[in-house]
Length: 325
Ligand code: PBG
Image 1 (cartoon, rainbow, N blue to C red):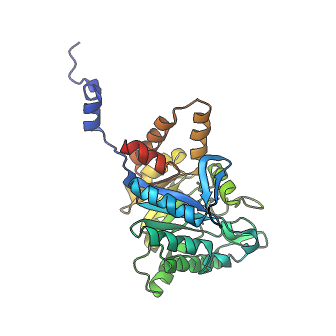
Image 2: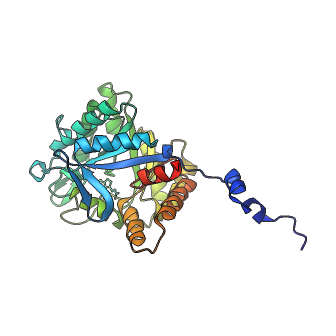
Image 3: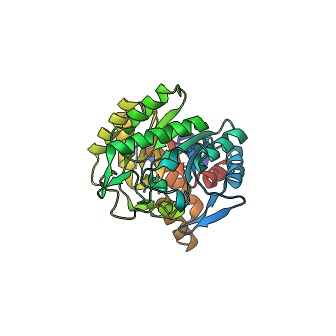
């Protein structure tokens, strides 16, 4: 054969493959989600997320120091609210001495350079396990947005670098930006979960925070997984309303959406590699059906190749260790 193009030349050995690799993962790409609980010295493994833990503030701070030493620049906080503090207004969400607010302060105090992002949605605080206020069996948009604005301001006041609204109510980015501006929080960023789908892959997360919806599902606010154009529309509106970073969630089953959004916008795009995606790899690896390390790197590289500038992933620490090897 006299071939003009021999594509295998660029795959001959690791050196040339590395030289021509189009996508390179680094710990700078990762956002590490953390589950925080009350108490001291508390470390509880999440039943459906092996080797992932819910920790009290002291051990969370210790973990954040380790993440920083591995090169991870951002954490995304979720708290487990005590049952007796849950109601249908979400008011514990803006308690200045609430668990979230104390956690933000502790982390910023210990590692000021770590970018602290906070989940903004009412589900951990809701007796109904819904992301918003419930009236007559419905999740009402506008009163929920008022609550989310108060919650966001409270996170900013505690020192959060970014608030990350994950609720999918209409108009919340605009109102959050307005309240931050009004109170002179001009350095607080907004990472919007702009294309968040109603997904079964959030199951293990709801175990972690005991936040499964008590009735119905989240399909009246989270997106239908059959839709693609709707993701662009949602994302464009969030950017117009003031989002600094937009997000697609989940990640692996939505790589097409990540790419579409990456091509359509000029702000950084993040993707959330969610709890169920973590659980799938862990469960298969525990059975010896998948090589865990390879599955982690292939999955995260694919998400980045699809167009994600940032990846929120429960594998942040494992991947950083692999990449630092
Ligand atoms: C809360 C929230 C959820 C996740 C992030 N923020 C759960 C949900 O919407 O039901 C899921 C994260 C994961 O599964 O890893 N609004």
